[in-house]
Image 1 (spheres, rainbow, N blue to C red):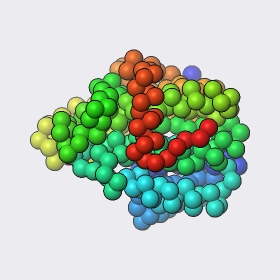
Image 2: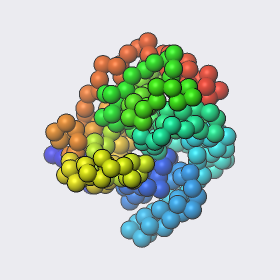
Image 3: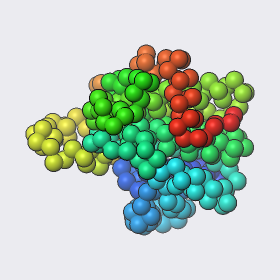
Image 4: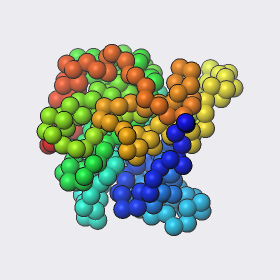
Amino acid sequence: MNWTIERISDLSGKVIIVTGGNSGLGYESVKAFAMKGADMVLASRSMEKGEEARAEILKDVPDGKIEVMQLDLGDLESVKNFASEFKLGHKKLDVLLNNAGIMMTPYFTTKDGFEAQLGTNHLGHFALTGLMMDVILKTQGARIVNVSSGAHKSGEMDFSNLQYEDGIGYKPMKAYGRSKLSNLLFTYELQRKLEAAKKDTISVAAHPGVAMTNLARHLEGKFLYKILTPFFKMMAQDQAMGALPQIRASVDPDVKGSEYYGPDGKKEYKGYPVLVPSNEASHNLEDAAKLWEESERLTGVKIDI
């Protein structure tokens, strides 16, 4: 039987954060959880876009409980401010859905000087998870969900040039793959640490397959992108279907730590959410430990479990 949002039970009383909740997969996730009664925090880099998304969702879910909060994952100061502000109003956090991301951008750096794709997709979420960990651990049965991608399979870790310093060796797809592989290395290492500390919090991951979102907006002007768009649309699914794996990973009571959810179709491009495998590199213990150490050093955030 296919897993759909109809299978989500009542989420009343649950507090859920969705990063990048103003568009794409994040928007669909906020909407699904709000429909089931959760107290939602829609985290958005732009408050204006966040409020517009909230208003749009409330048209379909008029009694939805959605709070918009500003969060720029490319700015550690913003991440710290978000965590502090959240804790002023909330004493628990059932799900932290680390959804926000950028994809295949030209080379640039974040406010803190990180290569932007690694900085936004991994380091920003690493810092956020660390800063929220005290609230997460106090919440029974909480979970952290990291959104990866099939592109993790093209990712390679190179700690001698982790961030393509000064753009050396930088290729948009190569950097994107590394950031998505980092999401999985982080997910599995976090789960190992949670288990070692005998916590009931779990760390899981998901990927959307090929979904029609605005994530590829940096490619839209490219000649090849224009040619391939019709084929891309044939392979892809809409963003509501693309969001199902991360929604399932966030709230299905049968989900276990270190599981990875993606579409059940051919090559995991589209379909309903099921357990899927990730590649051997994502289970490399040495790389996971090194990435953790580097992430703590770069962000200045130590994750206490």
